[in-house]
Length: 271
Image 1 (tube, rainbow, N blue to C red):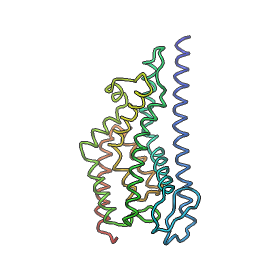
Image 2 (cartoon, rainbow, N blue to C red; image 1 turned 120 degrees about the horizontal axis):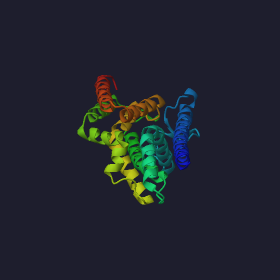
Image 3 (cartoon, one colour; image 1 turned 90 degrees about the horizontal axis):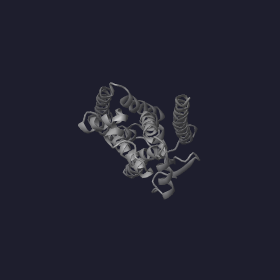
Image 4 (spheres, one colour; image 1 turned 180 degrees about the horizontal axis):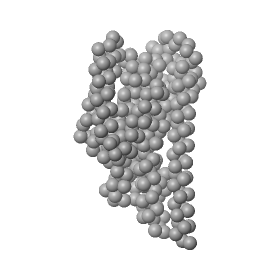
């Protein structure tokens, strides 16, 4: 009787976590689709203007400097984009963490799984702040179009080549190995912390490993189009395959070759 009750609780918790992650991912993607549709403006000629990703048809003269509100909208866009792209790939880690947490509890209170997940996304929020600042700098240097696409084949090609090379580095492999082994990561860092601060810190630490694994792929958006939904989806799938497939390292290296080849091809095109 006790065993079946425990099994029912475990199944319920698992369903709640999976449902929460699915809802979070869907909401993030709906927001991105809404922004992309708003920025398209029905195919209108936007020469001389740049779109602000606010979903409200907001525009600014392309030559005018960013205002704080525009920085905030772009930052939110990056945060939501990272949530939509990274939630599917971190789901196995969160589920394993929840399972280990239940086994470690043994009647004593432990911090919620939400603290671990929050720490993970905190790392990507920090990345979003850096990406927003980089987008601002690229736009000021006229290396990004008002529609958030790469304006220079030289810069775009260089970004693709560097990202492709990174896929073959020992740092990429070391970070990817931490992402591919959820249980190993938790046990190698002392198991499930008992406090909310400890859980948040452990989640953030995993997020940093994930950043080390995937940051170069995210930077590719500056060459492929920051709001290009097709490329966002493709990169999200690539990240997922790298982490959950047994041949993840091989997939990462093949993607690196493709990125490198695409960069070389782009360098030989007219800017």
